[in-house]
Length: 254
Image: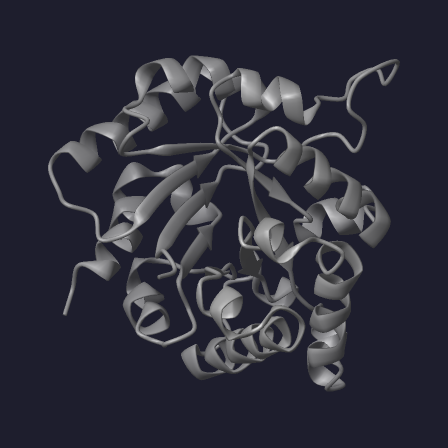
């Protein structure tokens, strides 16, 4: 049975001290409620070890926002999957649209990152999604399928089963625009069908597919009610414990 997951992506926000306080606030909030989903926070590299020390890792998962496409060596400024794992983090966000757009991450680069993450027992939260032009010209199914095939479809069924997918309509990130719940369901169902064709029904049914496009407490419940939407990858709303927990709580409401 696939998991429901709400994962925060802090992006390039918070100093170390601010990040520790935010992590503590989320951790405290989780003590007072039963979450009907796995809860993860994705934090800057600088925060990982310190945040890991102040959270209950049985209740709150820790993620990096990226890792290098090389295992180790003379790559100044890079942070390897092994380094990420050594901090206590269990997840890593890969292929975020901002990384693809600003840092020119290709399908090949991301394939290497996924393999290194898996080799270090990290769960990749692998991002896919189309830009506005691709949404408007109707090619978004092809774009998303190509992103999945290009980086993930050489994995064994066993390894693919360790991946969490996050669909992010790039046109809805930080813009205040949100895909409607029906639009989200349409593409999530297509993604699952694409997995069925490659790996079969069982693997597809067990794959969590998160929605990541301006998800907030006010729309989370409607989005999460859709059969193929298994949670959210949360940007701006994850930077305040109250709004982030409002999204976590969307799984608790009938």
